[in-house]
Length: 165
Image (cartoon, rainbow, N blue to C red; front, side, top):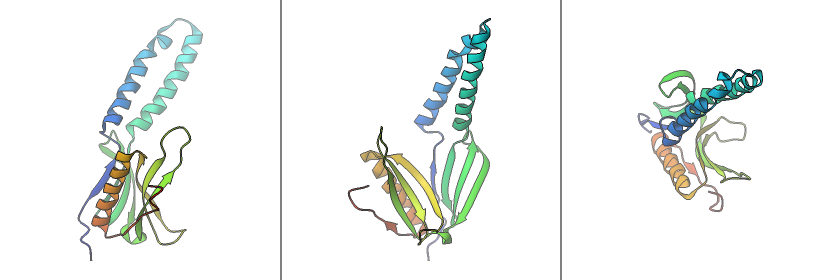
């Protein structure tokens, strides 16, 4: 029997891309100031539209998701600024039987590779643990995460055909 004290975490917060996106949102907010500081009504209207879009972007940026396996439980959490847990969903390890990769084709950029944990049949529980753009380096990251999950959970890795991932 496996000892399920190992923790495996995949998070979107505090990466270089996350910080860069935050800085871009701040810069876009500063760039749009002339729209709301203008005396013309039309500029205020466009400014309201512009800042409502920025507010939505900031909300998605400020609530990154985090997936983890710890103490025999898979957990998905949404955390405010990567620090304060606002929502979480847990699923016991017993709901799953394998770790595998899925690859989604994209038309205008690299495909997306997912590290999935799923049950034995088609209608069983599924848990998306991590996703990456399908570059050679990111596929290796996905394989490393799958291997760490396999070691922590004792679940086998079901490898797809070599052509896909």
